[in-house]
Length: 117
Image (cartoon, rainbow, N blue to C red; front, side):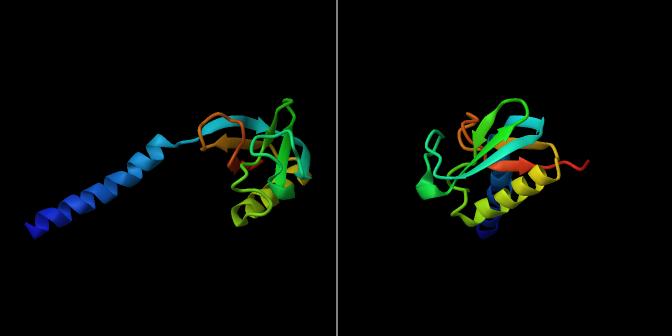
């Protein structure tokens, strides 16, 4: 009986990771575009609001403007890494792909991909 419970628990743990990634693959909001402008600070006209002056808004070459998710912006540890990557892509003129995992609406993004040149 104990072995069956252990086997069931292990199989549930193994399958739960597959279900988690399959359900939230991320919506591609911007695919291979250049960053034309970066805004930082108290930005009021974006999803999530200005977040006490920690907001980040990215303008892209296709005319799209999309904010960084307010859970991952300038006052969050996760956001600082994304901001560094955005700045790198901006100054090195690299194309970026932006994805949204929070609701799949592309009203903000929480993942950045910078492909090799």
